[in-house]
Amino acid sequence: MACGRRWRLWAIPLLFIRVAGQGQPMTESQVPAGLREWIGLDFCGEERWVQFHGTLSGVVRHFNSRDFATALRGLGELLAETARSTQAAFGCATAVMSALALAAQCCDHLQLPVLATRFRQLSAIFGSYDYQMKGEDYIDQSPWPINWKQNMEGILRSMAFLKQQELQLEPWRGLAARSAAQQFPTRDDAQRIAIVTVCDYDPTQTPLARLSKLNRDAYAKLHGYDIVMYDKAPLFTDGLTYLTEKTRPPAWSKVDALLETLAKGQHDWVMWLDCDSFFMDTEVRLEDILGIAQSRCPKDPGDGERLKELVRKWKAGPQQAPDDLLEWYDNLLDSYVSWDDSCESLEPPADAPSNRTLGWSDWLFKERRVQLVASEDGLMLNTGVMLARASVWSWAFFQKVRWMTFGRSPVTQHPWWEQTAMVYLLQFPFVLAAASDPAVAAKSQGYATAWSPLGQKTINGYPPLVSSALLTHTTFEPGDFIVSFSGCKIYSSQEVCNQLFLNYFFQVHSLPALADDPALQPWL
Ligand SMILES: *[C@@H]1O[C@H](CO)[C@@H](O)[C@H](O)[C@H]1NC(C)=O
Image (cartoon, rainbow, N blue to C red; front, side, top):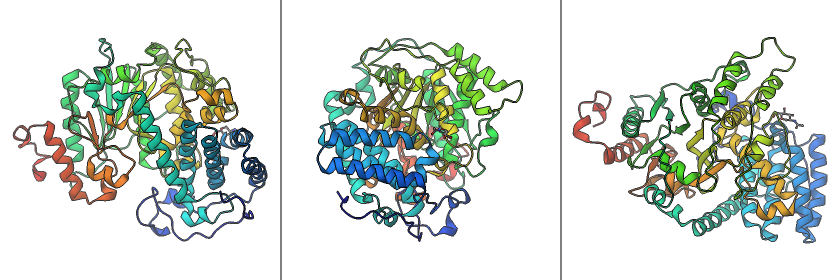
């Protein structure tokens, strides 16, 4: 612990920034306009942070005298106050990062390894923000008790432990989806499922969009699913669209695409699949995956009809302009949300820090039925492959994710985009609830019970070229369900990636049958 040194509160001048926490530093002129505005911005000198610093110093004293329970409770309260507003929390992200990392260490000492991991993940969310906006030196030389590299190494260690523990408790996580599914009673009822993808790629640079479409079409035809493909990033339109900034990065469009498909009211589940992912075992049905994901709490809320009604009112908007438009939408949401606590195998927190506008509300805390299936990689939630139930919960959830970009919001330019917003909802209040109550801490999994996290092995493996470079990712093996190439271009050239796409694609599709496809011909 580097807590012994004197605390200083000053801003370090900015030289370079690094994007996505990886690769070469970028000079300021290369940075996109939306991002440029946030670089180097630092509110750590404000009164709020001077107070934060004072409280944190008190917590550090408890920590140093080995009273970890008191320190953890103190950190929970301190963080709950700050984190209720993303605007406030990212104003001095390194401070929040350091408090979260300290909470993780408290958990280590209190023998709460799962909670420790969850704290470290949140600490990475805040750390990566300042890493992008101000650089590693800023973090390491800041007055806050934190070191970027040590913290990242701590997360990877913590996650490796967590994944190992998961595998021990649930050995099916080590199997390909096809074999894993055999261990769960299949629900025979076929679900109406839409598979949604945005493929915004230049066809003269890569055949990816075409391969992706062919792969999805073939898979959907086998099982009777619908395919929704966008070739340009969509923007969800309603009375709040005007709050979306022009410089919002395209990654956020997956949220809009999901909302648009949910709004159609034609499906039971909506699947998001990144364009650079292929179905590799086409005999695995999505119902099989849902069977695995819902094994702990199989109840179906069956509120698809209520969702349709809600969407109708949402799209129509208020009849007269209300004083506060966001509040009007929040009231509408509140009149439709419900939750079910009949499933006893999962324990939501009794009391968590709340903020209705942010989305930290009862519908998020109390729902026990699975509403969202998404994988967790060696670092945290991975949004490359997700299934959302067509429910009021999913509507509320993805609206709140979207709301986090409204106005001038730090989250919009976070290097992990919607992933950050989703973790902010799915994990942050749950971890804070556990920190302030030892009884909750002992049982807490540290995330929303409505989220069923599956391993990458089951739904989202990466080819060896990518997984070996990333360290945090599970390697796709022959027989696995889905392969994802996300990150390929960071570690190799477009040519190498294209070759990789084609190689995997033709493991499941016939070359002679597609040899005449005009869009593919230049690539064959
Ligand atoms: C609640 O969240 C909203 C939206 O993020 C934010 O504007 C507001 O300041 C937050 N309220 C508190 C008390 O932190």
